Image 1 (cartoon, rainbow, N blue to C red):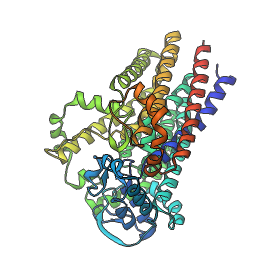
Image 2 (cartoon, rainbow, N blue to C red):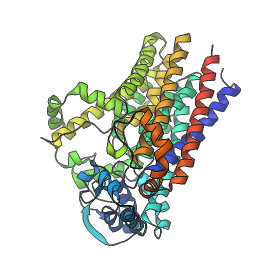
Image 3 (tube, rainbow, N blue to C red):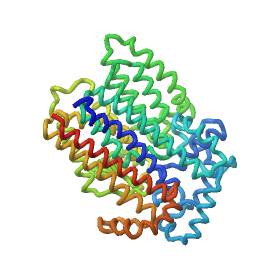
Amino acid sequence: MRGTWGIDLARCAILPFAIVNAGLFSALLPLWEGFDEPFHYGYVEELWQSRKLPVFARTPLPYDVVASFSLAPASNVLRRAIPEAAAYDAWFALPDGERERRRRALEQLAADARVVLRGNYEAHQPPLAYLLLAPLDRPLAKFSLTVRVLVLRLFCGACSVLLLFFGASALCRSLEVPEPFATAALFGIFCSEMLYATTAHVANDWLAVGVSAFFFAALADGRSPLRVGAWLAAGLLTKAYFLVFAVFAAGAMLWRYRSRARTLLPGAALVALLAGPWYARNFALYGNVGGTPEAFDGIGIGQALAAARNIDWPATAGYLARASLWTGNNWFNSYSRTTLNVLLALLALAMAAWFWRRRAIQSAEWTVWAAVVLFLAAIAYEGCAMVADRPGQAVAGPSPWYPQVLLAPVMALAYLGLSGWKRVGRVLAGAVVTLSAWILVATWTFKLFPMYSGGFSSAMRARDVWNWWTRGAAAHARTLSLTALAPAAWLYAGLAMALALTVAVWTLQIRALAKER
């Protein structure tokens, strides 16, 4: 089926499908509803205002960001860091006139160079993603804060989609995932709500997730150590967790080229030249290479490992697995546990099918899988470090946006396993595709639009949602326009496009799987 018209059309349709969903997510998400977004955006604005790299615990937040905290709503989770913000329940209970007054005040906040003595806890992050955003933000200085954030979100979401689409496609080619399973893997990736929650807001994850896909593709291909080094350097300048991949890549490349070690020198030199200065700066400033808040607080390997016994690992693993598929942004509410568990079970079955063909597994597949396992171990360690750093506090577990870098390799391996399972594999692939598409449709219609329109209840059922859309959506449109970053009319138009593209791509994908022999 490789190269047939139906598969080509499905593959081509995935890109606009993903870009529309990323754009809708960017516009629907209220200000600062993205994970740690005010602090990430503060990093961007501070870069072009001060023209200096930030320093953890010293660099302040910009004035306009701090001024917005008392004007925009915030989840109960975010209010732990921003206590002056109004909770969503309180925001939706305000009279229309008061919400309109706060929104007008919010839209009058232009960039302001005044100093506020409020530290930015994201100032330790590597600079590449922010350096790419700062030149886009600087010309918008006279526009309102909401416009600036929306433009940057749209840029982040679109760039992440492009990087991930081409990076995951390259990974599927390197692993020789046959069609239509490779296209199904791409569709599954871009049906993930947590992917958009991670990448379609102002942060550095938009770049990290896309770069990681290209890094895995170069690692699986293995023919160009220089390409591995280039993507690794980009990753190290985006997120400190790429240090784990640096250790793994060095070992994997040395094993592959053990008789030609000199071949690795250009790639290693590139990593040292590009990323080395940043991590040397971390060591000079903080006394540690990673520059993480936990390391800054003095949490070392011994303390982190000692905290492992205080963690309920089965519950934490279950939470992280489900949250890696769906987390209601900074609300941290959840989707149906049963639905997510079914999808996880199907993906686990697909991975079992990949393991079952162990005699046919190529070295590239083992390399990718070993990198996935190592990163999962690093996520577990981060969870231990968080618990050690916050004794006596409730810590849900590792952050669910970290596993998004594993989305492309896990999907590629899972669908590779299904591709070798004859008819059963096609049926299971169709089930995963169908359930993934349904979760995305329900995300928009059952969850996010009601959430940000003030009509959401965790107890909503299908009948409640139907009544909300047929009787209440129009009444909530005004609230939605005052809460989201775009007018309700634009959002409803984007929703119609997103749903239509989801159904179209799902139909093409199911037809392609049904015809596969």
